[in-house]
Image (cartoon, rainbow, N blue to C red; front, side, top):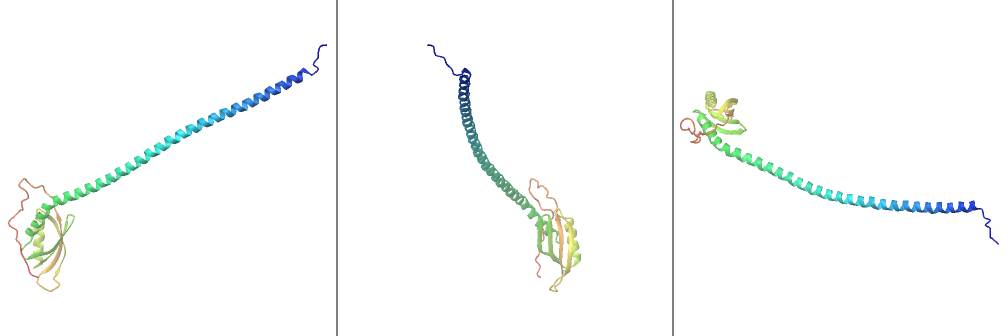
Amino acid sequence: MPSINLLPWRQEQRKRRQKQFVFGSIGAVLLALLVTLVSHFWVSSMIDSQEQRNNLLRGEITQLDKKIEEIVALEEQKARMLARMEVIEKLQRSRPQVVQLFDQVVRTLPDGVYLTSVKQTDRKLEIIGVAQSSTRVSAFMRNIDASDTLSAPELKVIQTRKDNSPGAEFTLFAQLRAAEQPDEEGLKPAGGKPRVREASR
């Protein structure tokens, strides 16, 4: 006798579809997890690679900063050396000027005048001395104005000496003229032989 399946065929079909849906969902979830894991590992590897590059760049930047500091220190040292060389050159150039200056100061002294102090600040001279009279001081100032090295005499003060000895103490200022280039024979003092006098106070 033939067997007859009495179960509804629609119910079996529904169950079959439910199983397929469950298996499909589980497969989709597993596939999504797999894609997520692969993406995570790929992004992590990219981040690690970028971190290595950043560390390398930071190391290079640190070395460059050290080199820049060394260059700055060398530039400062170079500037100090150039400044010292400039001072030395100025001193070497001023040697003949100092000799010529003292020579001219001695030449401009008239009779009856002697100096107790000569102070130079840049191109300005402060001259302190003793003269027999104010006329001698005026003659000294005229000689300064006519000098090749000195100019612009300016009398600051003239007064009788504190110890009541003869003569008057004076203080005047003068300016150095612009230095001239020496000729091939060197610096030649102008005028005759300088007079050197000693005066007792």
